[in-house]
Length: 113
Image (cartoon, rainbow, N blue to C red; front, side, top):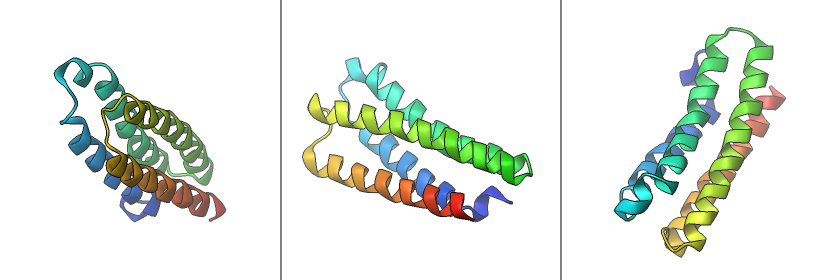
C-alpha cells in the first residue's frame, strides 16, 4: 500500500502541522524541552505509518499502526501536560484533542481492513 492512500497518515499529517504551529508559540525555554518532545512524538506517528506501508506486507502495516498508536498516546500526554502548564490555551487544546481522536478513529478503521 502506498502511504499516501492511508487515511490515518493524512490525519497524522494534519496533527503534525497543527503541532508545529502551536509549538512555535511556546516560550523559548520550553521550545527545546516539552516543545521538542511534542514535535518529535508528532513526527513519529506518520513516519511509522509510512514505514509500515513501505515494508509491503499487511503484518508490517499492522505493526506500524500499533507503534503509531503508542506514539499517539505519548503525544496526547505531552499535549495535555502543555495545556496544564498553560503553554496551550483551552481552545487549542480542544482542537488538538479532536485531531488526536480523529487519528485514533483512523487507526481503528485501518486495523479493521
